[in-house]
Length: 303
Length: 91
Image (cartoon, helix red, strand yellow):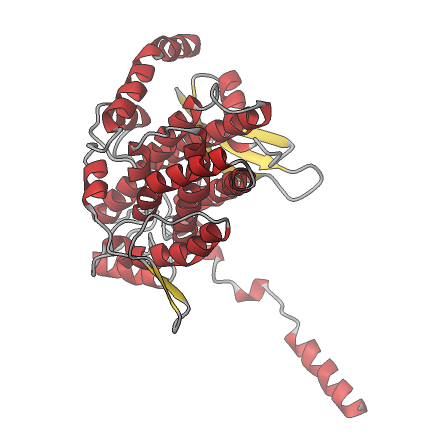
């Protein structure tokens, strides 16, 4: 077990590319920051998995149904793995984290505070939200100073790649479909563009500890911009319209410039007061209570 | 509930590698959960589960005495230098 005499000595270790392991005596401030970050990621995977689950019976056709089943399994699996990594930090047990989530006491990503209204929303989620999540996760993975999380991200990223490809393929089908299908996707894009953009968060503040401690390796605005530069041309190439009146292509720089972002929806979502937060947390909580007998039976089986 | 460490190995390749951990009520359920969490896309053909409580571990300070023993390595530099000199003399 390694230990450091001061936060400064610890930071020197991190700046030198040091990787922290679970049994190291890391400073409490670092432990808390890493824990909060992983807990939010775990919660988001679980809440995302529950949204996917809603679409298992409603998917159009058996192929989509099987793909959504696999995706649901992946997301819930990611939550499982991340809750283990978070619990090992010794701040909350896995059960405590889940109880806090279902009581509305902890956070999960903004994109899971909205409702997926049509199948096109599912496609928009897979195409926009999964790609944005993947881009952020890759940036964390690249240089993450907390070893157990970095290793878990490797496997999560691999699986999120499948989800993104699923989204790309379904978008292609919808784009080549009927006028009704194209309208349906445009509606979904209108609903999901801003939440996906806001998944990256507001501009990173100077002195942000997640950056300083190499938990994250890139600033939010850099990642957001990278995503915009990639996805605006992709979506417009299919003939869809980005719901941003101020969006323009700067001929001189060759870059896409987006309009000002209204951050109020992000703040509301992160305070569990988004458009669909109450229903989602309520459903998840009901599910947790309805399945109490399974957990009790497992405990009995083990005793 | 017990915590199990999960190790996976691809058939005929590599060694068993640590994949992560899972929490389960008993060994049988642990196997199912580990398969569904860590080997959904053929990440391995063989799996070991080890109860975390059974792991005997050593940390950096125990291993440290072996970290600085250059006499246990031989990088072959003397011989390599002679060969190089011979090659250069011949050309």
